[in-house]
Length: 618
Image (cartoon, rainbow, N blue to C red; front, side, top):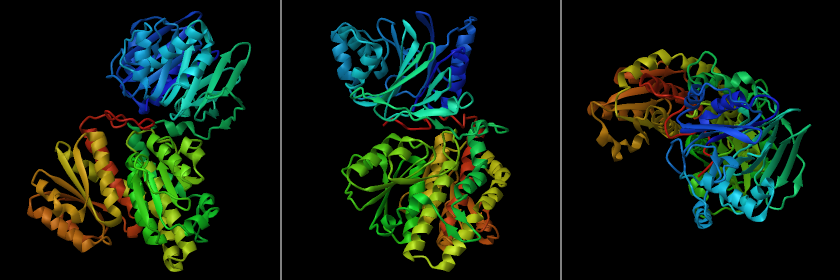
């Protein structure tokens, strides 16, 4: 969660920091702050609220902020309420050391007690202020350099962190370190950039070093730049590996769209095509993903596959369960990563674990991955971010190629994940002969048509706007789906909750009579996925039951469906598509419905309250 940024170079730091924070704000927006260093001092500014509030506060001082080294932070609150005092950066008691931090220090209270007994005082409620004072205490007591004090302090820490630490008397040096939370370094000949996400410095450099867990770097500016990369545990010096970023600057700009979320919804024909490109060869009717083909025997012989994920990725995993069981005839279990990692799961050496994460940095999913590997399982990863922690730690995997997703409510990542899961199920099914050639070739052709069908569905936006106008002020929604579209109902409900703050629940349609029907009345809109091939007659029965209780039905239907068109209060038409591939299309109207309702209600669609894009702490 939280976003950190730092700059050390020859240019004025403040504009780089403030613009970088704007790009990182999807990671947290409770409060923000910057510190810019000059010779033997620094200017520190922080405030509750979003980055534009910080920028406004600083501009009100009507003074220039000079300095070619600085650090900045945008916060998602963990310890302490969002306010000016708990905002980062935090300073030590002597005001000599200053820190920014993303993560959670789990043993902060025990350390705080020790520091209090040694005369330290605290202004904030944060664990971060404890850490910076621990560094100061160890530095002074042992007469150490800042880098050695940071290293020793971090060996006493339990928890997760990415940090940047600086010293007032040495404005030419920044110490950075990582464990559990993401951190990347951008490098030019004359300057360093530090950030939670390299998108914040992509317009300055594409040379990036991804710090690994347990690594720290000492960045120094003298006659030339110096990068000293070390292991935190034993101070062993490491050789930095610099990579080239392949992100296009236009991918992280809104363009003609008001919100990133809407832009990303409309990008889905392209992102699905990009995920298929080079993997689905339609004329030859061949699917090939290197990470699967090179380990096909492991998948073919798997007695069970467990898919582990969180949030929207968990919903994609549920769809993956239907796909793999139907096409590859392998039993599949889907687990919340947060539960999997703590319940001593039964995992053996021949088991296959699939972990799914958009960012590749989701804390619980990463911990589940490490647990599975420790138990000897083969771990396959599906993620979107090249060089992410999950991508580096799995045995094999596949990128989704969805491009940067800035909107907190995930959209294009969801359909890209499903696309990879379809390819996975088809490849394994073909190798196992659990799908015949005709059906395989038919689904390959259907899959190739998905981008066009998603594009058609996006043209229903005006219809969805009209429906949204009618229901934007209700208090509750119910979402229903059957079979492979039940997880789509869950995802639709989640999207509405996330960005409009309307209570919504997703249910299997058959379960409606086991409780949710008690909520149905004239004030309850029910969104029902009513595709022709998915237990259609049963869905008709569900709609009849809702209408008998005066409920309002919003139905997602196939073109040419007369029966549901006559029954429902509102219909949103999608193209005809094979049922097993239908989630790639049925989810589109639900994403648009959530967006339009939230927009009409005047909510900040990209930055919903209490949420952050990448959940990098527990």
